[in-house]
Length: 120
Image (cartoon, rainbow, N blue to C red; front, side, top):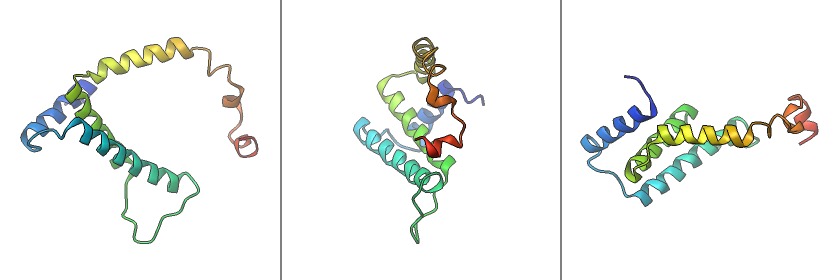
């Protein structure tokens, strides 16, 4: 299977309508999305930030949490009639037009990685 955004949305819809029984409400899925983003943030704070793991904290995998976020996002897109592939293409076009010189002209982005610690 080709895992385009369109195909992924269809795959999630098929799964929901067979194994998942039905979609949770849009509000419930929005809250679930926030929970999944929180789990991703927990990993990022501990693996790439300054926070340490607590004892007996369940092991979370970065890739798994990102995939969980995508699953719920596909659910919300399906429920609200959004075609994510089309929306993403439009978003990339908007960013390209709006930011074509913005980041290139940003001196903060041209610092060496070692400079970031000394010049936040």
